[in-house]
Image 1 (cartoon, rainbow, N blue to C red):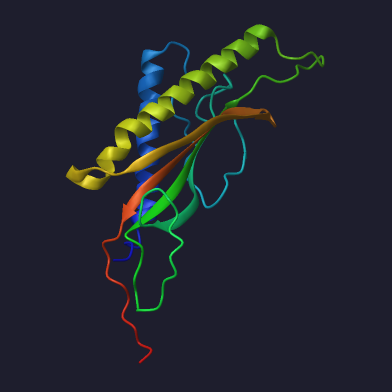
Image 2 (image 1 turned 135 degrees about the vertical axis):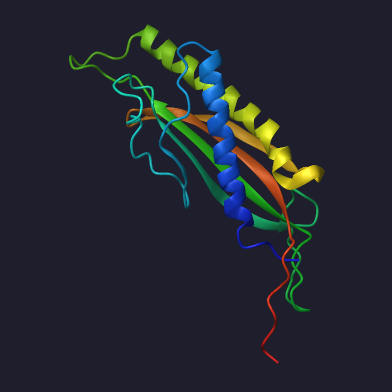
Length: 195
């Protein structure tokens, strides 16, 4: 069976919502921790680091940007290994499962050089590191808790990929979390009109 036309996008929207809720819950529990940025998007391709200042958060500089995108999608007969079997010899024969590598990116403001040209203080760097570390744990935990629930009662298979700190660059710093998710086919193949 082929993928439903909205399977990929609907999963990205569900992951975005789940991570946003988790960030808000963490902000309520951890003093000084910013919540979900108001700039949250499912994006095509690698997200642009447009702006780390969240217009919802005022001048505290704690805002940011949360995005979900897909790095790659591929067929697999033994999830999560890529299937290199030649197809197309007998009509529509998709792989047993489609694997999708999702990338969740959370950016926040990073301390930068001040108006006198002095580097950030150790206290400013430590505060930014704390926010980044709490964000890292929150995003990881959100995916571990939410992904199984995105496929009904049978759950969803997934493999947590690498998480890394990205930046600081352009006044932004944050985390990038990768996860490979199984998308079972449930749509029929299009009719073959080439007879």
